[in-house]
Length: 159
Image (cartoon, rainbow, N blue to C red; front, top):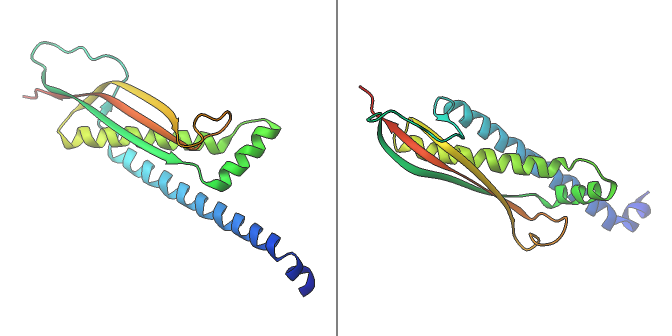
């Protein structure tokens, strides 16, 4: 038994590191989602619409641009699983969660900026996503995702 283990030590170490890396990445992703959900609950009352705002004369005290940006990278082990998924076809859940986390975090950062400046709502929300990094221009390869959320924060005149 010891001969088998010692003879295949490289393979065992590789598999051990794959399991550890995948587990650490999964734990980090779950923590990030938990943070996103808690912050979304805190900011639920700050209205956000993707339509252009039309307000009565004198209703708006101030308006200004707010934005939030997030760059997130997929870990190596999920990228390895995504490569296998591309080979066999089907949904690439690792990339779906990557984009979801980036967009939600960018919106939260935008809302936090608006709230800190006293805004009552954000109108005309726009979202942009792009791939960045060394592998951004390679076909079927995602290095990191940048999500940018921006809109017009509105401070209303309240009696």
